Amino acid sequence: MRIKSLTARVLLLTTVWSTVALVVIGLLISTLYRKSAERGFQDLLRAQLYNVINSVTIGDQGALSGSPQLGDLRFAQPKTGWYWVVEPLGTYTTAPLVSPSLGSALIPVPSVVEAPFDKNYERYYQVTDASGNRVQVAETEVVLDTDGRAARFRVTGNVDVVEDDVRTFSHSLYLALAGFGVGSLIVNALAILYGLKPLDKARAALERIRAGESEQLKGDFPREILPLANEVNALIDSNRRIVERARMQVGNLAHSLKTPIAVLLNEARVLEKSHGELVRSQAESMQGQVQSYLNRARIAAQRESVLARTDAEPALERLVRVMRRLNVDTEFDLVVSPPHLAVAMEQQDLEETVGNLLENAARFAKSRVRLSAVEAGEDVKGAEASARRHWVELAVEDDGPGLEPDQIREALKRGRRLDESKPGTGLGLSIVTEISNEYQGRLELSRGEWGGLKAKLILPGVTKDVA
Image (cartoon, rainbow, N blue to C red; front, side):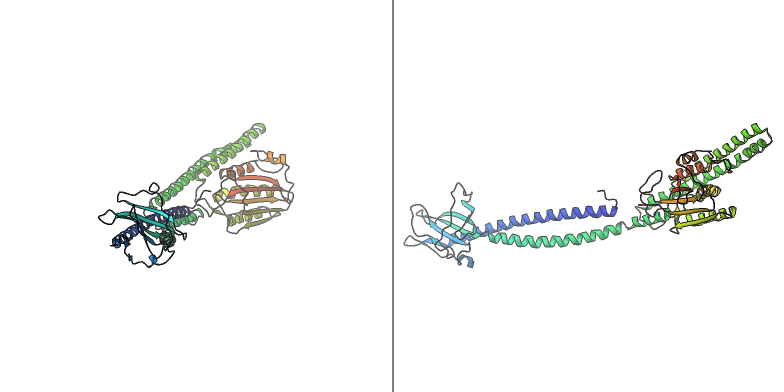
């Protein structure tokens, strides 16, 4: 699963890295300490071995004599795993000397092939004594007098001493590293959150722009983010200038074409009926086409602008108020939920689309028209679906005769009028469709609950999430 939050990504990476690093460091230190403890244990046995050698001689009767005092009570306590043994070698025979801790027990001795002597004529090996202790043995052979009489010296130590020492050290080490790791993660998390806080400020500033509460990215940003903020502000200024320039050009073009088209329409009235009717219909068609393409050009110039925002309730209330004055016999209802609903389009475009739908509804309604604006459900998206957008559903419904499915398809065609007895050019629904499509929305026609026509517009809303 892809993580979209930058903070979560950094925290996850630092947590994983810190955990792996501390585990590796813990294992490395524990291993090094074990090797050091084993080396120290072997050095201790070697020192005790030579203490025994220095304490043993051959007496006047030819027997081994001596009582090594190694300064460790474990050599005097039975079954501890700490022993020393001195045995005669070769043809020289006499009773061996053993530590009180060994008593009459024997220490297993491997062959020289299994545990060879080193260059100092010493060898070290592990065996299990009669009490079940794992012991490390240090052994050497020494000539004790000028007659060539020699003896084998062995000193043993309990390996569990090393294991207990390493285990205690490792336990303390892991506890210390765990505490250090948790503390480091907390400090890293605080540092990351503090370091990324300016990005949250920038996101909040973008949300204010998206909501129409601000026109620029404002805030005290750090040096790393300031160029981005300046570029965004420059882009917004450039977008605003493009929109204003497009509006001015559209206005100039509309003004320059308005008079010639009006002249053609006036001249059509004084021509013969057949020719005049043809000129009039073509002039009206040209007028509708010009207006349609002018609208499209203007909308395309500012589509996706973060500054396009219209509060639905006041704009729709003005339209309903006008329609009530023009159609005194028709009841108009308005429902906006939530009250602060906003649409991401220019006010004049919203008024033109909804106004066309209200005019059509008033033309065919018997007595009642309802206009509603609500937030669209999660399953409702515009013509160009986008997970980042949020959508608004506007519906105009009347209690007139309504349309059948084949009539609905015919009504959406440019210039088609299903009822020639009603005034109009047949361009209203086509204009609504084009404007809504330019804003990535759509128009849907169906039969409403009152039996009349229900026109539903899906339009982009002002989203609070720009991340």
